[in-house]
Image (cartoon, rainbow, N blue to C red; front, side):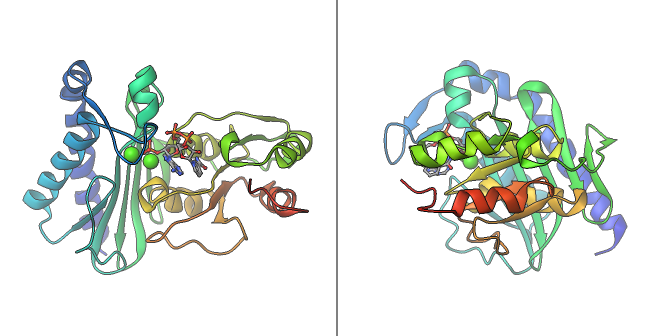
Length: 263
Ligand code: NAP
Ligand code: CA
Ligand code: CA
């Protein structure tokens, strides 16, 4: 893809993301929350409206681009073919509902299976993280450095404690520096991207939870794999780790040793 075309798409999408600043406050003021599969599985008018607006933006600006997103069925989408956007309109919906903080918008743009542009918009803190294939990663336009290597014993590790058995939790506490969990796959991953956390694990993500992280990882020298240390397919997702290169292998060794991590 021509550089000019990529710049045009980037400019257009950043303008669209900026337009959200005018509508999110009103959407939150009139927030309506409904449940999906169970009482913990939430969706709001904020998630639905943001996704609808992005679909409308694509239809008007890039009509040949497909949208693969959380609040739709995606049956008609061929995720490895042509121009594909993968979107989580709100990642951290429980945080949005309970705290009005620590949620983000995730966007990954793929052309014939190759990640070209990625965005994680930390709206409550006014920070837009962006990665461009071949041109690095940025926060609000300022370049991000590759994080320095972090050994597991010095690393803050992030994962949902509900999905790891008690024995493995103790082993992970012993092997690492400490545990923190924000509750947004995108923002927990941003902490790894920034070099604050050593790693983030989600044992059951969907494509929209991890779509953007691929390009940040490749541009910043981070590891992003399955929990068996295999390549991840963005179209199917599944158990994943994004990690500083200094603790990736040791973390997976500890995680999978003995009886493993599953409950
Ligand atoms: P959460 O605060 O609702 O969500 C934290 C993060 O995980 C968000 O990025 C969220 O995305 C995503 N998420 C939501 N449902 C998930 C699911 N079923 N599996 C994997 N990621 C999910 O709460 P949570 O405590 O992490 O998880 C919500 C439920 O999913 C709980 O019942 C938990 O046991 C179960 N679960 C979580 C994981 C994990 O590794 N996080 C793994 C397996 C099962 P959205 O805000 O876009 O929904
Ligand atoms: Ca999500
Ligand atoms: Ca979501």
